[in-house]
Amino acid sequence: MTEENSESQLTQLRAQLAARECELAALHAAQDEFLRAVSHDLRAPLRHITSYGPLVAELLHDAGLQGEALQEAQEFLATMDQSARRMGRMLDGLLALSRIARAPLQCQPVALAALVHEVQTALVAQAQTQGRAVQWHIAVDLPSLWGDAALLRQLLAELLGNALKFTRGREPAHIAVTAERHSDTGLTLRVQDNGAGFNPAQSAGLFGVFQRLHRESEFDGVGTGLAAVRAIAQRHGGEVSATAVLGVGCTVSVRFAADHLPPA
Image (cartoon, rainbow, N blue to C red; front, side, top):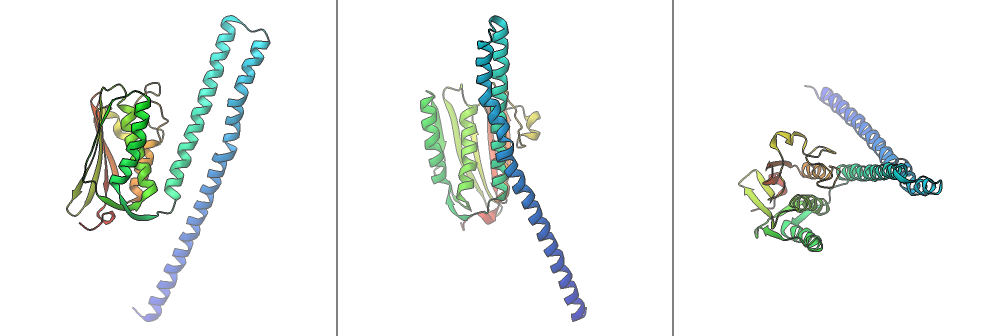
């Protein structure tokens, strides 16, 4: 290959790279426009629904509607209000997922033990206000990771928060956090509980957006927490999986690649 041909190919590659960068910039601009629409344009109608519902209820009462008719109308309004608020939470979840995907990683050494303690402390206070008995089993040898501290904290908050939520009704609840370091392939972080679990046959969409394996009347939430866990793991070169037995408990495993571990 002549020097002239090499230079020509290099020029073509640079042009292709520039074109891809333009395409990526256009995609980011489209996503920014979507976020603007979600955060403003879609929220305004929701605010109207939740604000005007009580006013409509007052008008119905003032108009002389009574008895079963009034009760039925109030139930309709309550359902409308609940649905609007749920949609608002779904929009919040979409925005959070978008920020996870877009935010530049601020990588640094992150002590998992310190993050787990921080998240656990907040959840212990929450459990106490609910009068719940929770036994925590936190490994003493949790390692450090090279990653974004804010995102890793969010990952742990989602996992431990889910463990606390789905162990409601267990006396006591058991929540364990462990880590297994592999010789040359990375590290697996596990969060295990003795909660509601789920049917493994239904686990295919567990980490998808708005996916739920339990009724919202049983456990609150809109189904974006584990999707966020997956997105954060992927941004750190990792992957996430879960095993469970219905009515017995669940274990969520997050595997991080070796390049996100400090030297042994």
